[in-house]
Amino acid sequence: MNHKNVPNWAENEFGPNFKMREDTYTAYDIDNPGARFLQQSLIKNVVPKMAGKQYSKLGYMLVNEPHFFTQDEGKKKTWASGPVSNYTIDKFKLWLKNKHKSINQLNKLWKSEFKNFDAITIDIPIHINQKGTPKWYDWNLFNMNRVTEWYSFLKTEITKYDPEANVHLKIMPNLWTENKRSHGIDLEALTDLGGIIGNDSGAAHTYIWGKPHDWEKHYIFEWRELCMGYDFMKSVSPNKINFNSELHYLSTVRSRKLDLDPKYARASFWLAHSYGMTASQIWYWPREANGAISKKALNDKGYAGSNNQQPRVTNEVATTLIDLNTFSEEIMAMQRQRKSLRIFYSKTAAINKKQHMDDVFELYESLNFEGTPIGFVTENIIKKQDHKNWDVVLIHKTEFITNTELKALQSYLNTGGTIIVDEVSLTKDEYGNPHQKLLKGQGNLIVVNNLDAYKSEALSILESKNLLSEINITETNKIGVKGCIWKVVKNSSGNYTLSVVNVGKSNATLNITLKGANTIVCKDLINGVAVSTTPTLKPNEVYFVEVSKK
Image 1 (cartoon, one colour):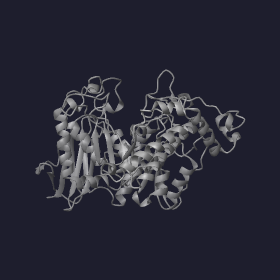
Image 2 (cartoon, helix red, strand yellow):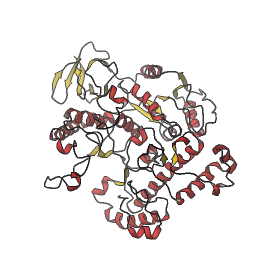
Image 3 (cartoon, helix red, strand yellow):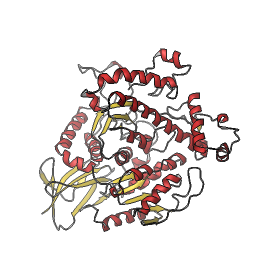
């Protein structure tokens, strides 16, 4: 669904200012009643003609890259940030009334003196210096709720005329993996809403402008959005198809390289498919049917250094997908591995803290090179999913949580769950008021004070339950920071399929062992030949083997 080309008659009918935020992919006011009338009319006349067709079985994409930033950073302009309408403000007032009940309660939290809820005023975009305040929290949570409500409406309208419809949204996962939360996108709610996990996951390899990023110290490419984003979405919706409809691994506007190493194409696609991606469309291919460059692309700053100029890279993508399909059972088994370790994600902390997702990634990164699948839990996942799907919940630097989040964690402990937590977490509610502490209940509550302790305790618990991989890998490299991400599944012959991708900046020598075996054999599955059990992998190298006893 294209939300940019708003007809002029709609501005005349529903305006003034029905058209707004025209530099984004939704160029009109979603809270204007006319927006619903417009989409109801469109869907009513179009979807019945599409229902039951083969192409509609691929799903209805509700929107391209939704974002509704409402953040003012002063001199530093927030990308695509803008105002909202009076319709939105009126809706916010009603939301505040339902949430706080009493204007006195709101005034106490906001440190304001409004006579009633109708008298409330707020400057939108809201200034960044408000971050961490009750006003900031309320606005950003409301912004997410109103956006989720809008896409729920679109889904409901589509399924009126196509009951079998699968909807999805092309969500930028970095809106979740990075720190900002003023964009209105609740990745958990919108992933849960869709029948397909929709996204345009990306990975950076070569920035052509701007300052260096932290990941460049240790890694050959930025894998945070890819791995952590997919692990979160697959935790929310484990059994859904994951469709990356605008894949940004090969290039983005900012991350491009004219002589890109084809090995990078294999590494990024291999990693993405082992982490959950089912299908993708590459960004981008601006050529006409006869092969000529499109006129639009000639003026497009993303064309140079894209795969349109890289036949070796495009060929490597093709051969990589052939190999992935050849071993589709093993790759899908990796996607569907039980995620024994779960990191607790709190939307509350993410809204209130300046760098909460950096803190989440800090823990995720420390665990992601151990060959053990990692997932996430939230309040809703704890409530909706079987607790037997995981063994340990880890909570790291998550000071702010709501009472309902705390109750969900307590219920998990009361049914025998295991939680590893630090002393700073779970101490405040969404408005900074102190919380009661978790009680052990029937479960196991372990308090730690550093990342090494998290990893040690978590892996020790899995080992005691015989849940660690039979394969073990020791990595040695010059940097001294692990760079090889690996996964293991048992295959139909009773041996082990091992996938390793070196995302590190240096060569990595691996020592591979199998529990209970003095000697092992590693067979390269793609080439069908025996290979070393102590390989040295170059950056971007993929090692895909069957491991068996000799």
